[in-house]
Length: 84
Image 1 (cartoon, one colour):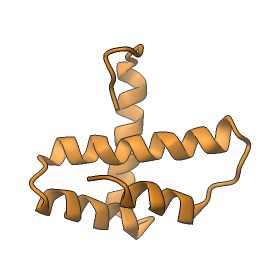
Image 2 (tube, rainbow, N blue to C red):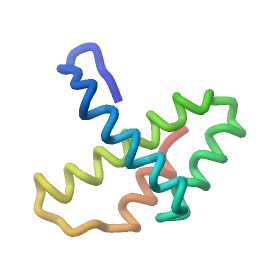
Image 3 (tube, one colour):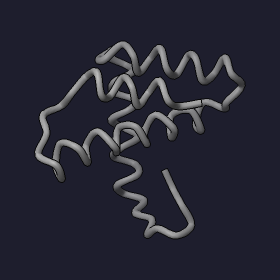
Image 4 (cartoon, one colour):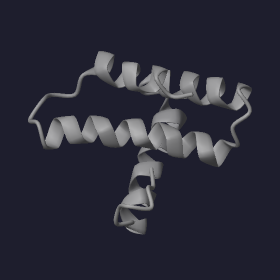
């Protein structure tokens, strides 16, 4: 979620991470919880796994807000599947 060449906004990061936690808490979509479990099993620390999932959330939000596309669960799930 953070690249040294980009401007870092800690409030935005906190909001994105809360979105991820809410998705996990409510199992909506369930693929978020499944991705967390997969990343944890692969040895990632929980915080890093949450941040990785957050990067997929950011990409989906970008598609919705910037590109004017509706939320696409298949697109979002594909983003989650690409995390490793």
